[in-house]
Image (cartoon, rainbow, N blue to C red; front, side, top):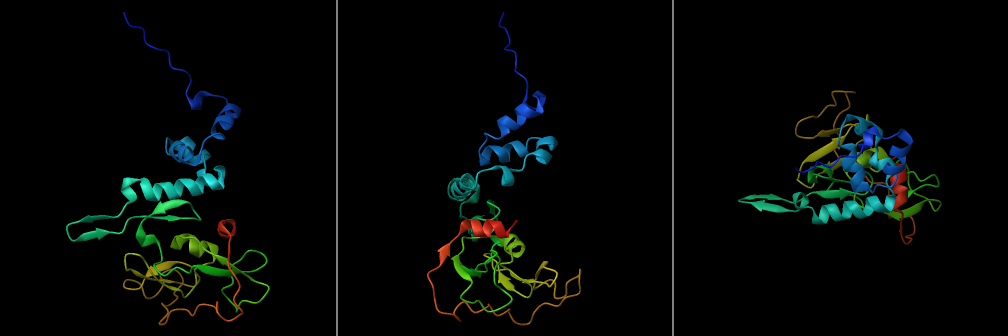
Length: 211
């Protein structure tokens, strides 16, 4: 008569200290799966905060390129451009979440904040930007009030003074604060107004701006 193997204790049954030790050894992808296991781990496991930044970078690049659900597809006359990775929240998101004309560079001040409310000076630093989603761009100060955006699916958006994002074709006055949709796109603060300098790529600067 076959004997059934006795299962060991589940992660939930282990002491809290042992749980923390095991979880601390997990990579970004494993942390994502664990956080989706049940309500307890959804509240206690934060992949964004726990994972190593380099591990998050490598995973999101691989996911956008290799996972079939994120690849471009064409069915009949419908074309889907595929999903894109955000290098601030390290998530692969719908093309509708990204600005098609996203800036490739930005000036930051000495505190690491984007320069958007004044002309940049020699004290500011020009940095190169990786791709980021609209939500993270607003949170990090890379998209600001009165900006007009066009998503990678062709949808026109605008940002209110309360930093909510609305569709131009559906909402011309913000229901939350009463702000009006700008008639003209906000003029970008002069990237070409000061002598050019070679941009630095600071992925961690953008990540810090989102926190």
